[in-house]
Image (cartoon, rainbow, N blue to C red):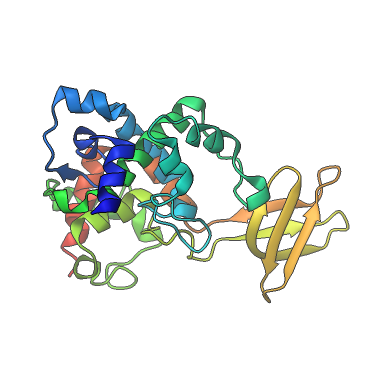
Amino acid sequence: MLYILSMMKRVGTVAACMAVIGINLLAQVPATPAAITRSRMDPEAVKRGAGYFAISCANCHGAAAKGTATGPDLVRSTLVEDDEGTGTLITPLLREGRPDKGMPKPNVTDAQASDIAAWLFAQVYGAGTRSTYTYSNILVGDAARGKAFFTGAGGCTACHSVTGNLAGIGAKYNPPTLQARVVSGGAGGRGMGSGATITVRLASGETVEGVALSVDDFDIAMRDTKGEYHSWTRVAGYPTVEFHNPMAKHGEIARSLTDEQMHDLTAYLVTLK
């Protein structure tokens, strides 16, 4: 109870914002104009922030910002809590990253960083008041249209099969989780644990493959396929880095996915019992 009260004091009332985040949470707190003003957050900013976070941050921090093996939990981050809803601490971090701690500089504008910060505040509020809201019914799409998108324009069958890696997915996850995984590219709160790798090419022509620990304009750190640690300082453009992300297609889809397509696809996946 003390934790919940603390979160409410830090973040304020954001019931109106929670109605528009990526997985359509329905807040039980009255969504009055005064409540929106006290929250210091624009509901539209929270909605935009959900999309920007899914594209730029979810791979490392998880679809719900609760952390992965490669990125920390942001919902319980002291920096996010200490920001107290102003964005003054979070926005600079989102613009510059933390190269010394393995966080590359995100490719977002100041406005996008501000929207991501607003979405994070909504998550903190939701964590502190989880007993005051329930999931709304998000099954508002058309399963037939979702299947057509899955097998056609979405290009999903290039990597997925309803009798293979997606068999029974409708029984494995509830609708909100399924929709979150669609938006985040399958991160599902556990980031890029799906085989994303890099190839580092040295000035000598030698190449090393493995998993990136940190990559920026100055230094590269990684573990190779044998688990051995390597690091280099970039000089005259070397080493170069080539990224191999099997989830890259999801990022492309997330940039163009409409609300209707998202709901239709969710409605179809739910049928795969």
